[in-house]
Amino acid sequence: MARGGGGCVELGGGLAAGFCPRVSRSLSSLLLPALLALLPLPAAAPAPAAAHEAGDFSILDEAQVLANQMRVLATSELGVFNMQTIYNSFVYTEKISNGETEVQQLAKKIREKFNRYLDVVNRNKQVVEASYTAHLTSPLTAIQDCCTIPASMME
Image (tube, rainbow, N blue to C red; front, side, top):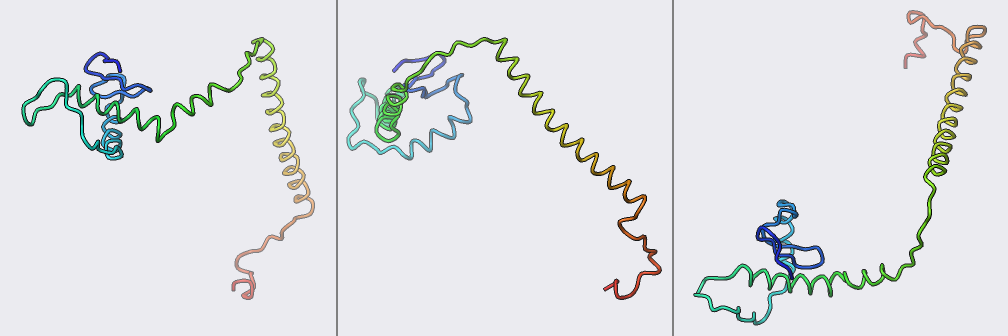
């Protein structure tokens, strides 16, 4: 466990306690009470290194206790180290890339996508124009004056 600047106590595994400029204040204020509620209280807490008067406590000692509990939580409950072992076992291969050809391929894919959209819009335009032209020569719907609508159609 390392002590960071500004009263920040790093707990390991990316966790920190105390005033840490790198840790969001609202996030730490929300998570800390929830995590403390999940942690089991030790049956007999070890006595701190320095004797304290009744009612006094050392924040560093309490941070050490919290760090130990967080470490136990990370290893046994969350399985952080087991997951890290699984991730470390993955085989990674380095890909050598040529930026110019990748940009050309990306531009080609974007151009093809826009051409497909343009084709759809042009087909819709042709259908609408054909329907309008057909309607001019032979109306698809009859014009009905509102005063001459039969009563049977008003129901």
